[in-house]
Image (tube, rainbow, N blue to C red; front, side):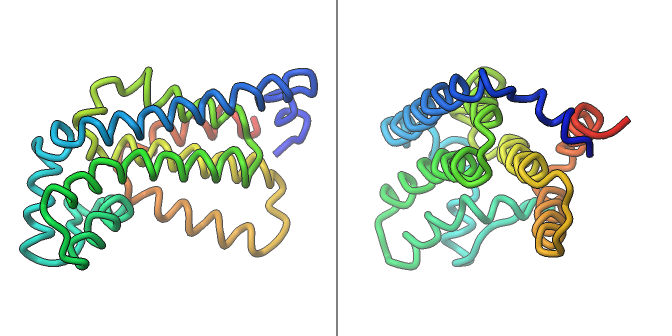
Length: 199
């Protein structure tokens, strides 16, 4: 991948501006976490989350539907609450806030670890502007997969040459995980590959 093409994403004069706005994107994601905590009943007792909570209570394990294994990440927190014997209301609260916590993890990996502030802004836009109805229907693995896709691209943009074996191991493992988030994630992945890739 040509480094000059990658530099056009954030030229030096805009880097400080992007970093400043990346803190705004963190504020947006924190606001989503607060809203998820306030409206936990509306989020956790609606459709899929309620169904998956009942199945987790019955089986005592994560509930992966149609091979979308990425759902196990957000189910870890409510499952821990179940293992600790917490009441259903607390488990539902944990399930509601688990989603924005995962989105905050994506932001931290993208902005703080991989230093891709522009993609941190894209995360905030993804979880506010593009998926406005996803706040109450929070179990869509497509939303989670798109966030993880941005983390994968942040890794590729951070290490464009992929000249060390550990970079290939991380990338291949991430792409395998990405495949199992949602089958439609390949469409934006292909777009990003064509946009940032060679040729």
